[in-house]
Amino acid sequence: MIHDVDALPAEVDLAIIGAGPAGLAAAATAARQELSVLMLDENPNVGGQIYRAIAANPLPDKTVLGADYWRGEALARDAAASTAQHAAGAIVWSVSRLDGGNEIGVSMAGRSRLIAAREVVLATGALERPFPIPGWTLPGVMSCGGAQTLLKASGLVPDGRMVIAGCGPLLWLIAWQYLNAGATIDAILDTTPRANWVSALPHLPAFLTSPYLSKGLKLMRTVRAKVRIVSGIEALRAEGSEKVEAVVYTKAGREQRIAVDSLLLHQGVVPNINLSNAIGCHHTWDDMQLTWKPETDAWGATSVPGITVAGDGAGIAGAEAAAERGRIAALGVAQRLGKLDTATRDREAAAPRATLARFARGRAFLDTLYRPAKTFRVPQGDTIACRCEEVTAERIRATVPLGATGPNQMKSFLRCGMGPCQGRLCGLTVAELIADVRGVPVEDVGYYRLRPPVKPITLGELASMPKTEASENAVVRV
Amino acid sequence: MFRRLPEAAGDTIAFTINGARFEARAGDTVAAALLAVGITSCRTTPVSGAPRAPYCLMGVCFECLVTIDGVGNRQACLIPVADGMRVETQQGARAIVTEPHA
Image 1: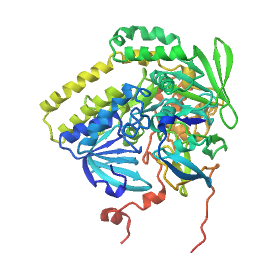
Image 2: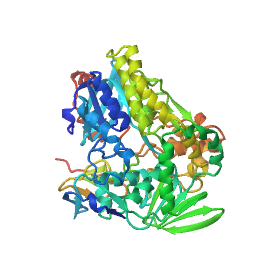
Image 3: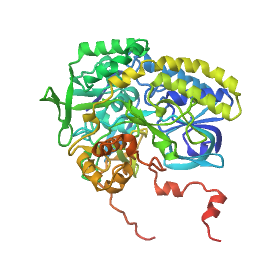
Image 4: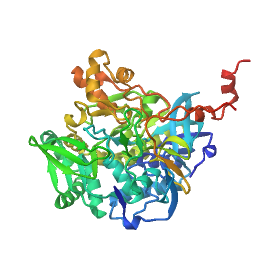
């Protein structure tokens, strides 16, 4: 494992950004094709979010996190046993085209370097969809994924009264894991819109053949038997001054209040597109998953030569699918770099594609059933949309008629998306808010035009990067 | 706000938060270490001064920004806590510090 920026190779065939299921599988596959591979990940250990801390897990009892989590062990082991190198705590802040290859800006422990890669696989995965409700910025309110990370990597569970609110498979998984760990959940507030059951019905036959069906049902049954579930939630807010003190929900038009110490929120995951967007890859709006995703071909290649996206970063399909998409992406790269002919590539990809198809079955059912309600995506009033710059929904709504017809104009007017998170927690909300006011589809509104550095680095760090003679000559007056 | 499962106990190391000494589990991130010792808020915002705490724990929300060993705005959820580390919570916007000329 590489921990020092000076120890990074200056040049590799393939740089993989992200060491989750897609990145790990791509690394092992590409290394087997004799490519020099460098896997860069900002976390201390491999696994990404779904297999977080898979090689350094603090929980000896494997039944707490469940068998699906521990499937990640094989992926991590394969990547570790390969010739692929892994840089931990490596923050990639730029990828740009250079001399037919790619130049990658990497920061490790506060020091940066530029390295070269002939091909790049973005395996940056997913992040949780914003959940902009009143009070969601209060301490004590956390995303379900964040809370799950604390369980996986540190064996921490919320102390005191806990409520989980939202919808989606991950919400049930964390509830199940908490029960396994002996934690008490005071209530689950299920925001799945009732009408979704009707629209999801046509996709049910396909879902009946999904590998997720029996596991999901079993897990939900266990949780339902032990936790108070309130479904049909119409509105939610967190209340408190210095920290969350209560969650207030509306059901059948009536407000109810539960005193809490922790409120965990979740309404699905969306592709993390910050890097692919900043590179200039073409993205399209997916109206079923309600998100942007980079346009990719059958091998994950984007509209920018040399840039491939593998895993949930190219559209949400889950961890098992992500690993297969990583393998397929690596085979595509190996063929482009002349290590495989197309016939061998296609033959090698047959098994991953078959597994991928199996896990894709019935995905539309989950996407439709757990498509979050508009009221939880497109906020009203003084609810904060942009957490970094504290821009409210009503200010965004009021600014649309002044000429801010897209997220980029809105950024200039109100600074939303200009904070350190660079739109990761407000981009979808701002785009949907503008579309709502204008009465047009989100794709007509567009998204932030992101630019490197996609992660903040200090000017000092930028200035003290090693310089080539050519780069110095470019700015030195002789 | 968080408690550690007994089986997850590990080696402990010492670090400081705003000068006060605390213990952390070796291998934890700074954000996990703060939450484990009951720090509910790690900063107040530069815009309104509202308190904030770690939210995503995966490097995307930037709510867990703290000062680590004198360097401000570090992402506590990405950095492993280390023995002797000095962590400070951040209050509002930073002032411009003008250094005297040498």
